[in-house]
Every structure is written in structure tokens, then in C-alpha cells.
Length: 209
Image (cartoon, rainbow, N blue to C red; front, side, top):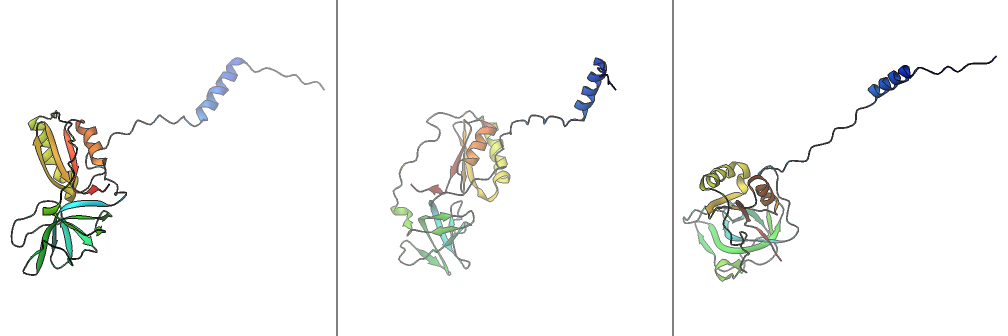
């Protein structure tokens, strides 16, 4: 018996195609570009190698700490800093002591793990240290920040950066910000949020070499 093949009307083929397309998975929407994180929303990575810091080494009962931020000028001084691992006072000059507390001003080199600094080299008395001059991060140019903007940013920083924030001050259109450690992450965030001509992040721990 011969069979006849009957062509489906074009309207039916079009309807079937629309039905199949309606059942298919939709194409994923294009993702929007990632927004630049604001200062304080990202954290710096750990140093790749040894770092050095200049400050007051203070030892009370819980061990020695390197204070890189503000120090209360009392006798003995008072401050809070990075716990030092493998610190020893043996052979170290420039040490003061009173009431069972020892302290002195030193350049300390070691490895930083985000919580502690493991000392890897003998400390250098700060009074005898002759550092290389640092490059001017402003390039000798004034910043673009107004006094009102810089003061507003300055007021926000302690909450944003927490204990890693030490101090800041406005000068010549710039806001100079001293922090415990930055590998460039916070500087990039500040540039993205405020522009590259407003905030300078300065790390008190600096990589060696």
C-alpha cells in the first residue's frame, strides 16, 4: 500500500518552532562588570617576604610587642602593637626599664603572618638607623581633595579600617593615611572610590629589598 506524505502547513511548523523555543532554557544574562570595592571592603594580602617596621618595642607581662602607631609618652610608655615572636633583649642596646617593663625604639625585621611578626634579624636602634629616602607618592603635585571632603573621609576611616588604621592628616589637597600593612590593595580601593589624586595610603610595615 502506498503512503502519501502530507506536508504540514507552514503555520503549523511556525507554531511548533515557537513552542519548542519557549521550552528551551533561556540564555544567561550578561553579567555586569564587578564594581570597584570601597576602602575597607577588601583586605590586603600577606607580604611575600620579610618586612621591617620602625617603632617602640614594649614588653610587659605577655611578651614583647612592636608598636607602630601612637605611643603614650608616660613612664613606662603605653601602646598596643604586633606581638613579636623570637624576640630577645640579649645584646640589645638602647633599652630602658622601670617597674618590670622594658622598652626601646628599634627597627625590627621579620616575617608577618597577619597577626604576629617573627623576628629574623637583630634589631637596630632607631637612633642609629639611616633609612633610604622614600619616593614622594604625590609626585610633587597637589591633590584634588577639598578640605571638607578630606575631613569627611578622615572621619570615616577608623570604622572602615579598624585596628589597622593608625593616623591620618590632610595636606595640600591630599589625605595621608598611615596603616599597619598594605600591599597596594587599599591604595587601589581608595583610588577607585575617591580618585587617584586624593588619598595616599602609607604602610608602616614595608617589604625588605
